[in-house]
Amino acid sequence: PSDVEALLVAKRDAGLSDSTVRLIYTVCRAMLDIAVRDGLIRRNVAAAVKRPTIKRQEARYLTPVEVGRLLAAAEGDRLQPLIVLMLGTGLRRGEALALHWSDVDLAAGHVRVRWTLGRVDRALVFDEPKTEKSRRFVSLPAPVVETLRRHKAALAAERLAAVAWVPWGGHEDLVFPT
Image (tube, rainbow, N blue to C red):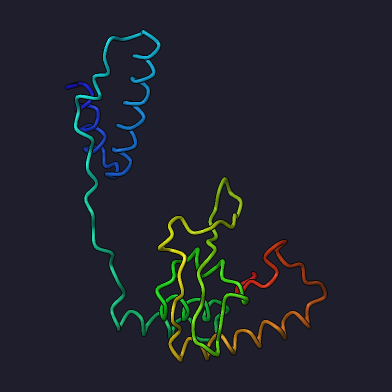
């Protein structure tokens, strides 16, 4: 057990994150469980070591001044509607990028979160949110509704002007398709 503890301390001292150190412990313990099962060793010494904890840190939020600077910097940029949506709703990046127009109700002023977009092995992949709590309705403040209305109109004009428009298969009505 002291060797396993020394390994974990060395990894933490090397600057690895708490979650990475915990993952190392989990893999080590699983490997030693297999070795016990296969009769290679008598006992799993990692089982005697306390599972490393992960220190919870409160998320850092933008100050009102930082929000103002971000909005000013995004003015006129193609990403402005995405930034306004994320600032106004607290949606995660993957949730906002996976948002479909069919899940946006501008009249009622809310969106339904039922997809996430993430990168898996260098490919973009749509998936359902991890937890039931992540599948939710989110209210849209009036400035966000207005920004999304303008974005929808600009997107429609962009599609009409495009020589070819190839939507993402199965996700044809993305709010942020490019």
